[in-house]
Length: 353
Image 1 (cartoon, rainbow, N blue to C red):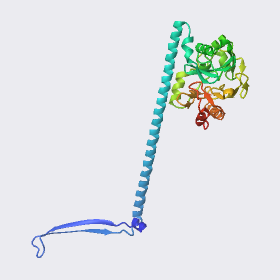
Image 2 (image 1 turned 180 degrees about the vertical axis):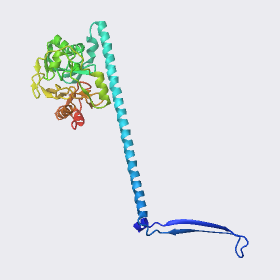
Image 3 (image 1 turned 135 degrees about the vertical axis):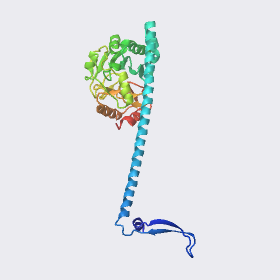
């Protein structure tokens, strides 16, 4: 019946007639007729079916167009939302950068007036875990590790920050000559900038991966970076990384080897983690199960990428590699350390990269 109905829909036709007659016997002067004609075109040669098929196709196409438009609108809304989030993140990081620059300017002015940076930097030393402290140096971090009468320092921050490190050493009740080793996660200006001055004051032995030794010993220029994907990465890379920048060169005493355990500070394992920088390494301090990732990632508003990569694929592989390690605490070259559930936090972000 349904197919028959589709095939044989009746044609309706309404009609009405009005007649005026004058001097006609037995007939009213005015009269009218009306009615409805309807018929089935049973043998229409398939015209009606073809018409219905065309209309069905048009309706289906309209539905597809509507679905496509709805999907496009959703994609555009999501893209706009993502751009808004990226912009908010960029503004937040820019505020932190501006605050750090303002603080650096304030400290510099105060240091010039007093002839020293030491007192103004004394409050910067913060304990992370037993035996490890963090010395915030603008947007970069250095980490002194205590081992009986010796100290080991991971990274040396931006140029002109040696006073912060020296005051941190004194705040720990040590003298500069107690700093025996200076180990670098990689050879970028924000990690080796004050190295030459620190070595000059302490006599510390320096350690770096061989791929970055030439640039550290020359003081630059540095290899270019491709900004991390996204608006925030592009902006921050342009703001903070300048490959033509020069720093005071520092001699490297000992090249680092992937997989070796340094016989300092109770044992520090070296893990080659290229991507951000070809000579990038991470350090796993065994006594405290603390992982120092350098610039394999950052932690400003949650764990994120560095501002750029020399090789993005290598960087992702290194993040996965580090996520598979066992550790209790993780420290970053930029951003706050994570003390609680550090391994879970890192794996949630990096394990599937």
